[in-house]
Length: 589
Image (tube, rainbow, N blue to C red; front, top):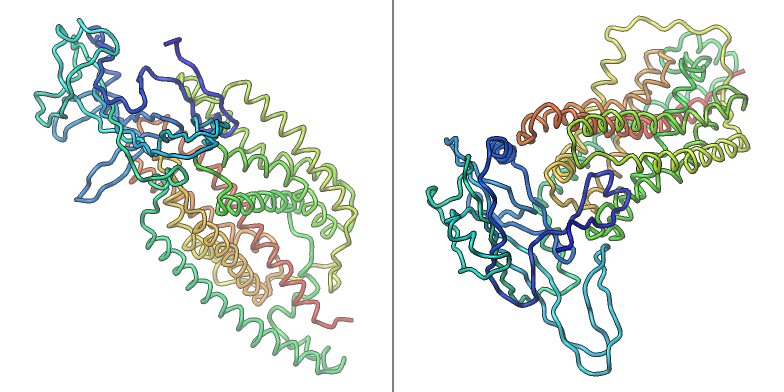
């Protein structure tokens, strides 16, 4: 067979640990046949333990024919459920015995076409049809539009089967149901591997062959998620409406109608947000870190929004494996210019000077990317230690470092330079030299901030389940239209939550709103992390051992940090412009 041949892979496939090799299974177009592959030598103790452990851990075999993943259809509670791939073995309930899958019944769906002038001769790695010009005569042929498998365990007589050669014909096999007719995994057993291929004509046309994989299950759940989010948005919008029209507008109107002496007298009697007018724009603690996080948040939010828009429009084909992750990386690199611009412009606003903008731009370029790099490196050492094929190759490390320091960092510096040239954001009021004392509160502000994160989490938690399932259970996620709607709703909820909470802090004369505005919406990341742990415990019971759990938690941490930076940035920017608008309406001498 010429040995194992590896398929070319893009950055996204390499990062996801996808590795495609050829297999010994032979298919001949429109030839139905049952074939013998091989018989193993007697299993030793180590091989038996390995096979039994892999079977119990629910290891899967994934195969591709003409760029279509193999699909297995199983019945659960009378409902057909589609899965990609098939298990390597079977463990009956209430039994210590394990049985290996050694016979595969493949069904290949083909569509017959007829035309002139063109001829479809196969698919490339990207899943696109390769078309060649043909003669002007009528041509016909077959397109592969489906690939299904029924996995079986069949006990063969090894003395009979060893007399056969690879690809010798055998009689067709019906999958047995009795345990004594299945191939058990135990020492000194010789396992025979066979398969059969059946070609079935189908009315499915070439452009529709991925529909079976992308068929949307549970659309009502997605609509329920969106309806739930709309209710939250309406509730918060009502609060914002009250704040703006009834409270703020009424107070400002009364304030502006008074003359200066009356205003001065009223200032002594005022309470609430109007009392912090001289402190509201005081520079927050750890202002450089805040600027760095806002810059990275803009970069992540832009990457997510553009990627999901392109995917919803159909530009990210599922046939192009790894393309989604590759696109996200490319977008993230080039959006460094936006991150540098926003961070440096905020820095100028807080400090009143451009001094230190280069250091800030470097920090922006290295903060989130550095966190991801450290986590990936730690996880990769674990994978190398366990000799896993999903470990990132050392050559890819150099590629990622080159992209980071040759594209992302320079673009972030360019964005920072543009930020130094941008127009200043002028504060509408002056800041007092002496900070105003903040009154004692009945409850700590962090409690309110943590509680605020539940509302954005209620917007995305249903969609989060489907995303986690697609990543960890090998299911296709392709309802990007729903995801785009949920993302837009999440942006609105984060903005409203942060705005309401900022106003509440100002009303109790707490002028330290900067970080509270960020974490009011950014605290949703805490609930995302808790939900990830819940998903690990109750939905990923097939994960084996502490290594798999550490990998899951490591990748979850990357997702959580990204969610925190993105949602926190949305909330902060909304609150900043709300506070700017609010105090620009106040007349102060």
